[in-house]
Length: 567
Image 1 (spheres, rainbow, N blue to C red):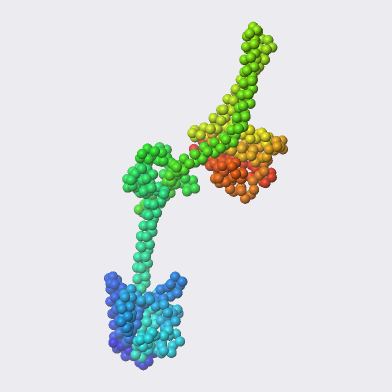
Image 2 (cartoon, rainbow, N blue to C red; image 1 turned 90 degrees about the horizontal axis):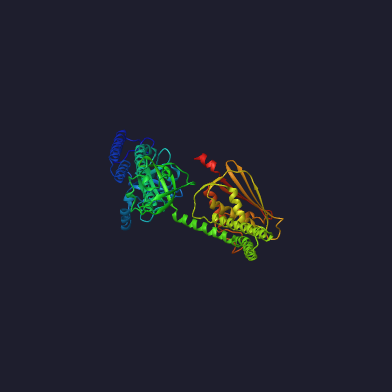
């Protein structure tokens, strides 16, 4: 049925025909909307709408399409229904392949392109001379008239319909008549887009879930998700950390089963990623597993839960302990010659005095003299000196034993000044030919630490200070040791009048293997290990230096009193 002319068109329309056409259109639109709600296939619905559109307007061919955009924002048309106007076998095969999934048109220099770029209707009853035409390929059916109508949502251009070759051409009456059809096309396409976005979101969610599960399963960190102390999920790394075959073996069990007593708080109290807690786990085979644990809150299966992420640092700690021992041995090697000299001096006069006493006593015994005479007094004085030398050797050996107690990592109250005196004695062979050792001790409380670790820390700083000073000007140089109590911390300062450190090296001092010493002198680990020791004790270390004027290292250590108050 051909749609009659409306008022304002070419001639006066027949009211009865107009009414029949409107009824047919509304009936068709109602059917399509009902079928869409019932879930019928969308391509079939658009084919039906295009058939009604062509029939009621008397047009030869046309299309209903969706306006989409390239990643660059350029619009293009994808058809949802299109008349088959293929005029060759190749084109008919192409149509059969492409039409079901939508044919795409990107040429904006065309009549339908003008609709997409302007968002307004395009009426052309003389296409051959229209400046907006894009031309027709050879063999294309003739184009005697064209009507392109866009349809919009509240915010964007959704799509358009295009029809061609209506006898008598197109006018505003046709445009007005087709508004209900455009509204229906727009509503269906918006529904299609909404469904498309939903499916894309579901696919994205599925892909993210798969990626997340892969990440969780393959991460080198052990992950425990638990609620009220019961394991809800554990990844394969967590199972391996504890010596089990899979995370399923841990599900439903109590977290307390897998950690040493006293470590449960690391799994119940939320923590900062920058401040992980060390936890000893119970491995199924009985071996020691040390880990750093960070605990966070999250939703799991829609309910609040807790996730604990554990990183196995057993091997790293073993390497650190080896490095500590290595640096301790390096420090001992540095002072070994001096210590040997310190022991050799008292040993020399001990042996000399003991030989003298032996000779004198033998002579006195042969002559029958007593010990009360002058020779006896000299012998007794020699024995006193030998005993004094023996005591000095005992003290030196005691200092060495204190410093070398690597296996004893227990912490307790430590007298910082006693440790500084010990380190001064051990480093004296390095210091005495370079500078004066000045002590300025303020009254300070004990610190909560390990005596051997503190000895390693301060001995390293003293040796570094000594090696920063050239030989030859003992009176003109000094190494200054001071202690003070400040804001709940004991502050130990080691200041030297050495050559100083260049500004570009200050930020690198505490990095492992960085050294400003000549090749073959030092390992580059000393200050890095000092930094680690201080951090492990809950303190901090700072450095200030100026070339040609010297360097000062300040160590801030928590006291035993403040630690007790905190706990």
